[in-house]
Image 1: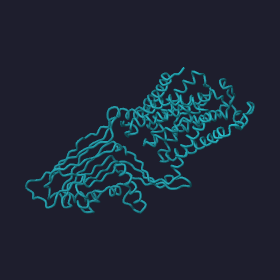
Image 2: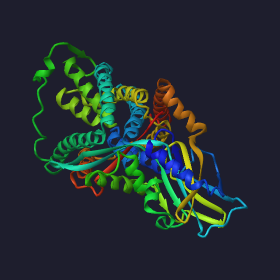
Image 3: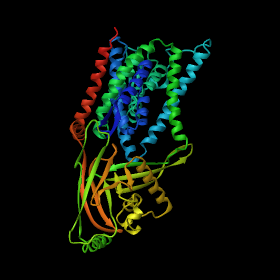
Image 4: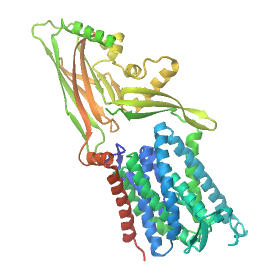
Length: 308
Length: 254
């Protein structure tokens, strides 16, 4: 059944988009990730203009993270203060990201930026996760990675000025690196149509030693606010948010996520991380092939209406 | 400008002594409405050739060329080139004023309808239109390369169409042409120009137009997105968090 998208200005099959959103939702529910890094490329692959895909994807990620935040909130698995510090940086990063997004679109480099960023970000994160989880799966008897750092060992950036106490996480960290992390995630999120959870979570765990119990909730909290801001800013500055597409994506992914979450609970930790690593790395490879292999069609056209 | 004036004059001179024929045309719909189930549209253009009773009949048969032009657009064609390990957009060529949709239908293969000079002058070919409307004639091989690519991509998307069987004569004086708009055809005003020829000479020409517009819900959404972006953004955000909350509530497991 085709449905005409009023902002993307093309008809799509409602079942196809819904099915895709449900599948992405399933995966995101299973792994506890936002799924933006799958959703945006798939939408582009289905013919949705990349600008519309990124802007509309933000709304879907906001919906998915809202569900998650409420879950973690009820279980008190959320450091609100830490989340708010990240949000401060995130909002600023989102603003920068949307401005950058608009400038790149005007210059005609947006698709290249999108593809290159996907390759670098997903390639790095996916690659690191892959190595780590392969080690854990095939060398289970080796002492688990590195010796866990003692709590009195501190990174240089944790002792920068403006220290803040985070009671829920039991940490005292300088606000500066946290705000900067927020800026980076907000920027990447609004340019690439991703939430950025797959970056925030490892950084908070490994660099800031935030307790695993609150890290996912806190990351989702930050994603919720930055993606709400991103949706708003995209709508206001470039009018690329397609509300009809957003609705299909939201409903599909929300339903898919519930089933995914159930399957995810039955997965073993190492297998879980290995699968997620393969998935993330696979998307990076897919994009690398796209720009690394000679395309069959070298030419592309971009069309703008001449407004009178 | 002068060239165009001369052309017009030539047309009048050619047509004046033989003002025996007149075209009456009509398109099946003057507004194509985009609704939520829009997947493109098919229009039919009908035309009658009215002959002055006093004039002598023509030796050859009539030929009809129907040109449908969509709203003017600004098109940038980019060519990818190797830069280190990756392929990126490198050279580009801009085309201003080309219609976003262009269909040229004729009753016979174009080379039988009229001479090459007239075909070029009347823009009876897609390639000539691209060359004429887009940054001048292909000055060199590179420009021609871009022109070809534009034609190939536009034709593949069904946005540029050429059909030498596109005009069908139902009787010697009554003809019909099917206009097919793909779903990606741009919104706005379309112009259909019908030219009557005989023995390669243009006898009469007539224009009509129609428009492609969003309607109902689609129109309101597009209007809201453009005119009240803050409200539009807010509604989208509220929908997102509303559904997120609803899902959490509905699928609660504790």
